[in-house]
Length: 471
Image (cartoon, rainbow, N blue to C red; front, side, top):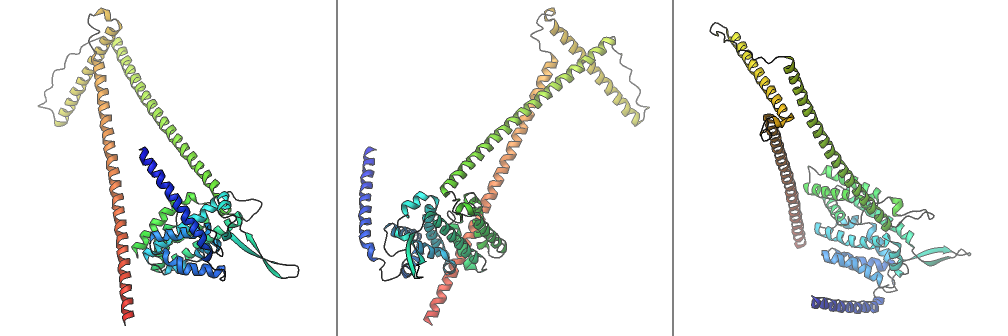
């Protein structure tokens, strides 16, 4: 294990030395990348047109490379390169670019935008990061035009401070929202599809403002309702993005927290806002857990109290019945009634025979109750003075045995009910899992169908272009 750690440390040291060597070589060469004879505007336009945009849609790795390259040029402090202007050109209007991309190219372009947004949102989140990585860098110098006393125009270089950078970040978020809403409302298949693909890729860093998120959610909902019975692939994309956007609502902030125009009351940093939201979420989770525990305890205590009250009521009813039977036996002398002679049923009608049978049943029931009361009295007497009969403590009374049997039967019934309820819950869970799997399969099939359709369209378009070029 120690040898492996030593090898990894040695390899890390080699990589650090190689990185420093490459960075030093780039610092020596970067002075000639953007000649001073061109203006910053022309230099950025040429850089985006020839270098950045063609490569960022070539592959997913190239998209990440392009976003990192812009950050590296900024870190190298390349002269005649405005980082602020480069980001502004990328985010200002992407509707024309989105309309000219294929499905895969739109996905890669969205990945490139995500990389660019991650850099600026990192600077936006904390003033310390901004001052360290952008404070005195030439890429964030702005030119402020002023007039002298002689009314002669002059220009003065000024470094963009943190609060103004937050205003610029809000402007970029607004511009992106405007361009993507325009694509969603166009009604054209390619623009809607590419806009949804880009939105899903840049979701971790856009939208960050609640008002912009609400506007996007409204347009996506409209697309979902319109395309439900027409174009299923667009409906699936809109459904997926709408669900992801709802889960991201907790990370969005109000406009006055994202940036503020009032210089006296500065908005808090995004880092502090996110920390506060995390604490609030943790507090709510803890409160919900304690509340659920309290509810469970209350339910358990209520069930126990109900069971106790039921057992008390049963014992009181039994004691009352015994007291009544004892009083009756004390008042009335014990007389065994002689059985009545059976009546001649041959001369009776059907109704009279039925009534006679009922009467005999009632008489039999009365005899049984009287015998049971007598047995109870004898058992009570035995319990009151057990020394009167030898071996009476070993014999269990019939009543106690019946009660034990009743309790065992009730327990068995409760166990059967619990088993049935558990089986029903398992069946419900299995049904829900099957339904979820079905829905996932349907979504995957719809996505694969949409991709195959898009590929066939791209092939047909390419074949038509070739035929036209040959003609």
